[in-house]
Every structure is written in C-alpha cells, then in structure tokens.
Image (tube, rainbow, N blue to C red):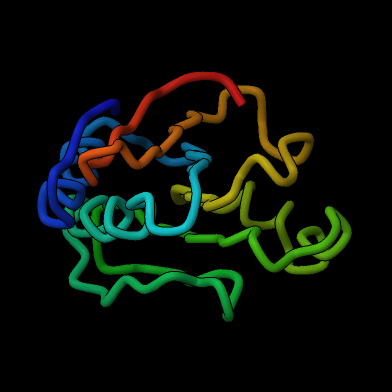
Length: 138
C-alpha cells in the first residue's frame, strides 16, 4: 500500500490499487498532516471497491458510510474528536464488528482503540510538493 504521487489523480490511483487487497474487517489508519493526500487516497480506495459514492472528508460529520461496492466502507476522521470516549459514543465498537472496511484518518489520535492488525499508512508531503505513503506501525 506504499507509494509516491505527484498529483491528486496519482494518489487516487494508489487508493484504487490498495482496494484490491482488502477483505471484510480490514482497518486502515491514515496518518499525516492536512493536505497530505489522505482523502484523495480514500476516494480512489472507495472507487476501487466499485462504489460510485461521492467521497469527501468526514471532518465535520466525523464518519461517512460508503456502500455500493464490493465492501462497505466506514470512513472516520478523528481530527475533531477530543477523547476516546467521543469515538466510542459514535458506535466505534459496532463499526469494528460490522462487515466492512474502516478507514480512520488521524488514526494516531486513538491508537489504543484500533485493533492490533490495523494497517498503518503514513502520508507525507515532500519538498517538491509530491506525496509519499509509507506503511508501518503506529
């Protein structure tokens, strides 16, 4: 799931590629600053599962659900959450038990609530404006 992108379209292509490898119950934590490509990657990921849903950042809704593809996607944004209790109040445990894929932007805010098998993707902006994705631990 690692890669390098020079444009939003290339970031979305990396997300589409990653979608081919996931199964029900996969949890993916996205870590990186604002503008690092997390939402563009997610757009490609959802499209790669065959959904035509309009993917947007869930910063204000906190969670978006995308159906219509091979797997349902639950797209969380932990950025505005102040505590793990707020995430649990959103039904976090129920989402973990649902048949689908969880994508958690800013997943490093509450790593203790993510399962041990979580896939961690770290997004960074390079000096030339391109974006990198590195897979690794929290």
